[in-house]
Structures are given as structure tokens and as C-alpha cells.
Length: 98
Image 1 (cartoon, rainbow, N blue to C red):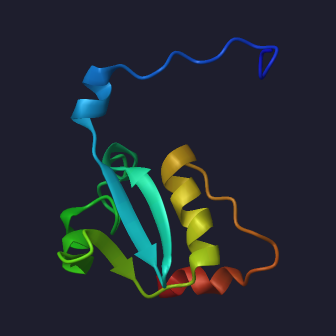
Image 2 (image 1 turned 45 degrees about the vertical axis):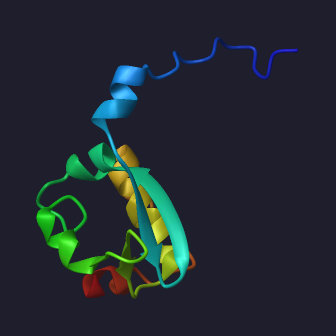
Image 3 (image 1 turned 180 degrees about the vertical axis):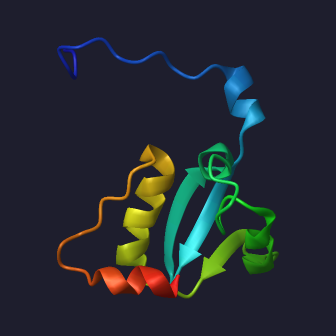
């Protein structure tokens, strides 16, 4: 039984998987996973530049940020979509702290 009425997208090839790296971003204890290429699309930002290496923990093999994980969801979605959709229940001024 099909999951959707529309055709499924083409599965990534093994070649594409080898060219990218899955990274873990630990934001105040909540772990987010994304592809390095997703972050590299915005090289003038903290996560898209080599500056994020200052936050890399060798023991856990993840990047740690002491920030609000609920707000970070919106930031990570910006990296994925190129558009910032901020939740109404959050104060927009918190973005100035990041």
C-alpha cells in the first residue's frame, strides 16, 4: 500500500552520501542532526563557517551550544529552507543574542 498518492522522491545515491557528513548539534542537551552541506550553504554564519569548530567536543563528537533548543529549531530550519519562520510564542529579540 503506497504511503502517498504522489511519486516518492529519488533516493540519494551512495555517491552523494559519501560526499556529505552527518553532524550532531547539541543545544543545551537536545541533539539535532543535519548534513554539513546544509550548514555550508551559509558560510557567513556561525554554523556555516569554521568558527563552529570552537564549539566541537572531541569526546562526544558533537558541537555544543548553550542556547534555547526550541528557538534553535527555527534557526536550523532556516539553514534547510533559506527562510526564517519564527514561532509567535517566542520573543523575536532573543535572536539578537545569538
